Image 1 (tube, rainbow, N blue to C red):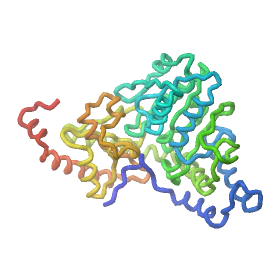
Image 2 (image 1 turned 45 degrees about the horizontal axis):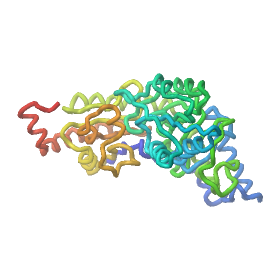
Image 3 (image 1 turned 120 degrees about the horizontal axis):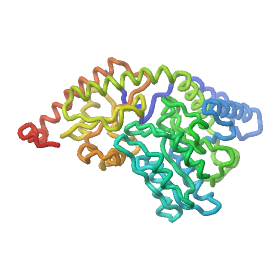
Image 4 (image 1 turned 135 degrees about the vertical axis):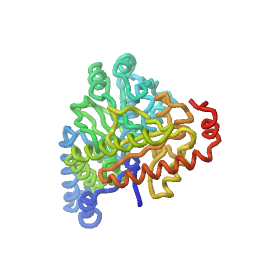
Length: 394
């Protein structure tokens, strides 16, 4: 059996999405910036897609800017805000558990001397306290960026409450919502955000396309120069087929969200329940209440996560040892360490991220296979053998 449980890394393109994109690769292939009929046909598709996406997010069409994905959108939001600050405000506030696309952007601004960054702590469930955001704000704060939901352990942040505090102080508020689009309502007005990042491949759209929502009146410095596209704010040839695909994917996601969330939540809770009850020294990372419907992050005492990952892969089960963007790193997850998880357990973590098409049969197969793998690997672990004899492991 082949089982894909790495939907937080990327998702399969929906058939409806692919069908919507195909004509714009070969039949309606004009450059939307061209004035002739071929270009006007493509521009019409782009404009309609922008309007559709805006309506689904509760935004205006002229507040939607197309980018290459979530990483570019995050970079643009933070760097653009800092560099456009008229009174040269320098402080950026974010959390310790953000995606590398955000954290490394902040680090780059620190190294260049353009900004000072305050990294907020989270509680054991991975949540930022809005009161901590309020305390961190000062006269030099230019932007606050807190992700909507964490990509590793699924914590859903109180974005609306934080946004109310931040915007009430006249400071820009950005959220990286890349991981949330397929399961949460992202109405930008309800969230109280000025800026929001999305990436289509996280909700069954194509890779290489994303967006930055920029509330009317917000001014950012350009990140990419060279052309007049996106109302002179983001240069580069407009990617018509991918934009059409993203709009269709978001439409389907919103249309089917209630049903899909119910389905994934039931499978998630069943998986977690069995794993915690049937696998000794198995621990859930993050909380149970404010958690994405498709996210399961478990640590397994006495064994390395990569050994579990590779063993599952040999059985046809695809999972992740954390964020796909940092999976080549030998360092333990910065997210789990921020939650207070011990380093050895952080090294043993596995993320199982369900999809809208995941079946109960696939979950049963995965849990049963996981139990066998954990037993086999622990049988080879000197630490586990010591624990069996002495009971000294804490």
